[in-house]
Length: 83
Image (cartoon, rainbow, N blue to C red; front, side):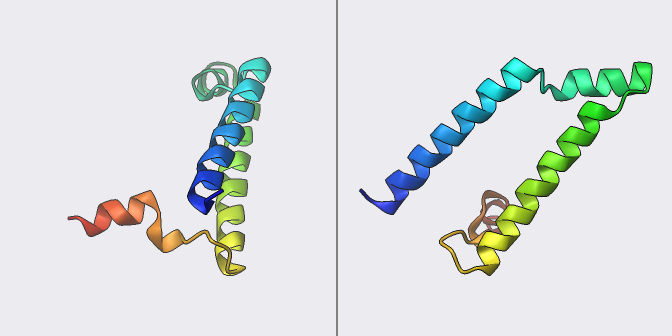
């Protein structure tokens, strides 16, 4: 199996698992913001911040370890090069 196919299937599996967990646990940014602004409960907002932090840290660690992930070829950097 090609590495591109493995990456696509892995991303699909991770997305499906993340979506199922999010659906079952109520991991919703809109309700987190509503709870924070209306009731002062910032638990879901902190959970989102933690998820973003873990994603950024994992990406940087994988890129530094020399894996096949290249942060310089991300979607954002490709978009900024076109301008």
